[in-house]
Length: 202
Image 1: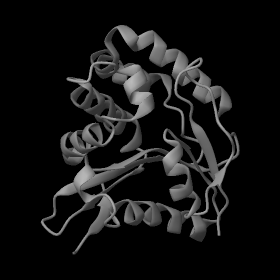
Image 2: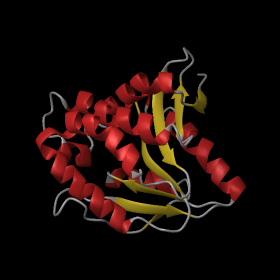
Image 3: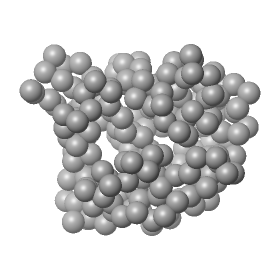
Image 4: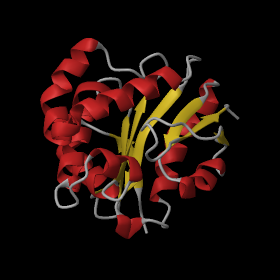
């Protein structure tokens, strides 16, 4: 089974967002923010579309993994050191898509984002905002290929990495790549927690 990891282009945004929308349709945090099961995957794709287009791709932080048919089956959105938070201009450009994604939960999403930002490490690092693959390819190494692509660069440059896992079951998976479990983070005011994880370069 052949696979390839490459930097994403703007032309990839619709497909990578669709893949991530499907990948996160059962995610606890996304389900807390977007509560309609019938529209969650599409609305989550709206979220990743604007974030990829207006923040992560311009910073060179998006990679996709493709199968042997050259179809995108997974994606990772990374922000380079010093750029994990979108500036005001990028946030403004994202706003229409954020409204489509969150609807009446937009203010809850804003409070959620504020609490994440308050807890975010200030030491320079690569930030893995989101990584996901289609359910049908999980367990075949696509996520591993995506992670290793950027983590190899972190190691070569001597730069740490940071992520927040939204599923406790994924914590041991990330630990295999050198991320350390730092407990839980309440960003939903009693709803689903996050597991912040830090990785020093190897």
